[in-house]
Length: 383
Image 1 (spheres, helix red, strand yellow):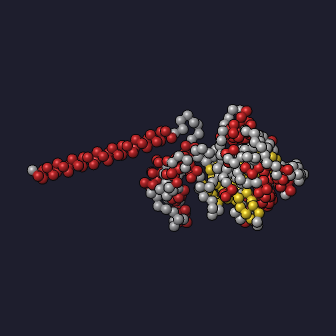
Image 2 (image 1 turned 90 degrees about the vertical axis):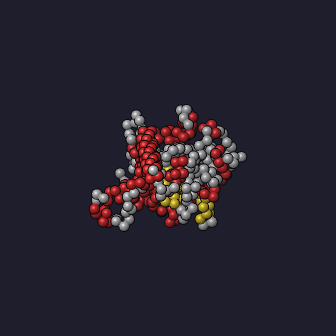
């Protein structure tokens, strides 16, 4: 009887275990199906964004290993560098978007406000990290449009002097999507970084200074003067829609000027002086940061151009460029009008605490490096 009782309990326990396993499998399948359904972009013709989102956290090494199973020469050439395929890791990443090898995917997906850690630093300095990437402040439009007093300074008084010849052939186009981004040292009684905006003393001065500096190097430049902030207000749009306002202007310029080959959207970072300033040969310079959109296909050439300029800058002015970062995802534009050209860049010049003197020094440094790059490349890119 005892033996029979024992067998009964074993059978009963086995049934419980099997039932639990079946329920776990059913729950896993159910949640996988639900996750797939809610991720499908219903009603949209294009699904490349959907495919990108579900595969972005799967490591490239996995795809390389998978490809090597079919291409024998690839396996022979890179057999030491190829990791083994883990089906469980692949399944985890595909279903949950979590990568065990990158803890940022967990925090970036689950913690509000942690999305910047999903961006990719392409190249940077020793002090470049995910905690000090460029930040675009986005206050309400009415705050940006407020009138503010300006502190007079020699940099402002001399901004229209030193005019140079306006070259007829324009190959560089410069504009400012966030054209009212300004600088605290030049604003009277303004200390809040989120209020550093002005209708005239702003990043457009950097663009004009760059035009003059490039002209001295024999490079014709067109600078757009559109007040995109006012355009947003006139059209009833919000500040986060700034690129919707600037893109038509960029496209029109390109359609009417066939020789335009480089496009720079000049911004200023919202970070403070310790991140955006460097001293070189006893002079303070505003630091640069190249930002590439992560949410459009074929951005490799944009990354390649930004990286080349960063490296050249670092040789002549060590540390002046903070690096190149790929930014996108939730809360970011992720394209920055760079899909119009492989030579389109967004460049952050300094931050809210930098002065025009510091910024103009950096303009001269950037222009020196870019001109060398430009004339070296000109024979192969001229039209």
